[in-house]
Length: 128
Picture (cartoon, rainbow, N blue to C red):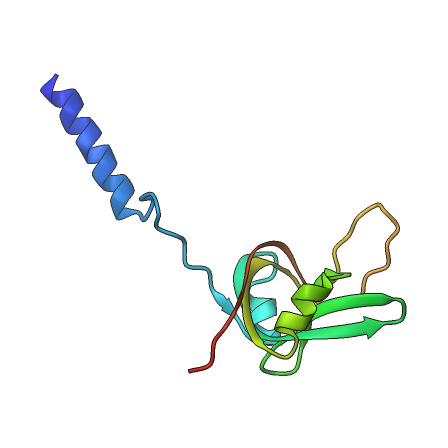
């Protein structure tokens, strides 16, 4: 019985040491430039830049402009409330960075730009 308890305690301590404790979030790499996109392609990243609303013909597009000027598409037809609140503001998003456009079988046309997909969070960064 003591051996079982000892094994369980060891397993719990190993889990905590590996950062798997409840409430502890994984720290994803930052993505601030085209170079970072290439380095972390297809990985989950924290994308940091300026929220931009772009009218592309009949389509409204939300994108993030990175430090080097590179645009990353985050959403097609974004909610107007989001656009009004975040346009030209610094933001950070967590999601999967794709160096090109997403592929699907719907026949939709995507802009030939990097895309952030599977977005888990979007927050405005306050200037200090």
